[in-house]
Amino acid sequence: MKTALALLFGLLLVSGCASAGRSGPDGPAPPATLAGTSWKAVAVAGRSTVAGREPSLAFDATQVRGSGGCNQFGGEYDYDGGRLSFGEMPMTLMGCDEPIGSLETEFLKVLGGGVTVSVDDGGRLLLEGPGGQALLVPAAG
Image 1 (cartoon, rainbow, N blue to C red):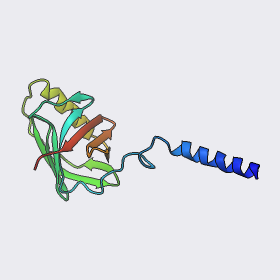
Image 2 (image 1 turned 90 degrees about the horizontal axis):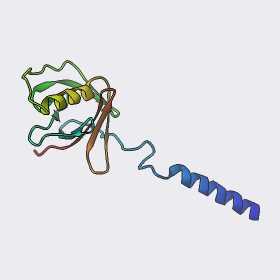
Image 3 (image 1 turned 30 degrees about the horizontal axis):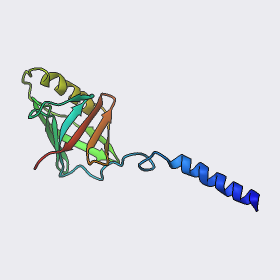
Image 4 (image 1 turned 90 degrees about the vertical axis):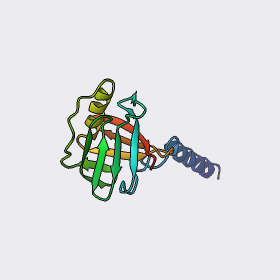
């Protein structure tokens, strides 16, 4: 009997340690859809954005429009299971003062290539990809 209790306790201890520290089985969950949502960046590549000139994204069913903080862009996007990719994205080509210009460049790097999307416990959208990461909050309507 003592051996069975010790074995049961050992199994409970191991399973408890294996699940400690995780918010879910795979970390923060991706949103089911991006359609109908609008976001503004609060941090890009670890840097805070400039108030009133934040990079932004607004999604409808198949199109995204946005700003890097200076230039406007838009086009088609594809979102599936937490992976976000963009089609051709025409963009305005205005010169941008610093630090807005470099933040815009970093934001556009994040959007390049495949991007992983998740939402943290605070409702913030995290975009991560080969070009870096950006943290966005819901934009006021």
